[in-house]
Image (tube, one colour):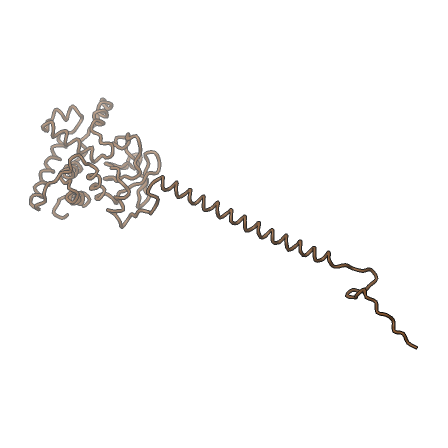
Length: 280
């Protein structure tokens, strides 16, 4: 990591890009993050600039949106008039191209091969997650997140590609926080929770749970059936105890009825009369 003149998270992203086979795309993203924002929004043409920006959106990631901007600029032969038509800072893009060229020279010096993942951009999101797992945030409300480590509230910026995704991802990682009226996340990317546990085990772990909704329903049904059987057995035991108690009470009453009491005789005496003794 010390060979790259970058912040540690960006250097980590490059190294993970080499392992995942997407270092070519990660190199472009790191270069775009090393320069100020390439988008500009003039006040008198705000709606036009927002519409032009939305054309570059990759729904799951602001980082991938930056990659898409650079690739589109490359397809149009790095033209400056194309940048002006799409409300992009041409100076910022040229600076990013210079940074990318310098980093590419360092990779060649280190004999690191340049690999590409093609259109499988989920691998790139995993590389981004490896660099920013310490900046992971969990969904709390509509557009509102909390940092998974310290509970700090953070929000999606209205200009983020994730803001108009149609659904809000449960976990995201972000490049940095910007404080204006709220704490807004700059350059956020949707990630899978399993990636956080895999790449940041010192902070995160995955709880064991049912793998699917069908298994969850099946387990609930089995628990309900077992509970009903237990209640039925308990009712049978109570009925048996009550029946035995009634039987004992009946036998006790029957025994008491068999004993006959004679009026005028002391208790424990027999009704047999001895003949009187005759004497002279």
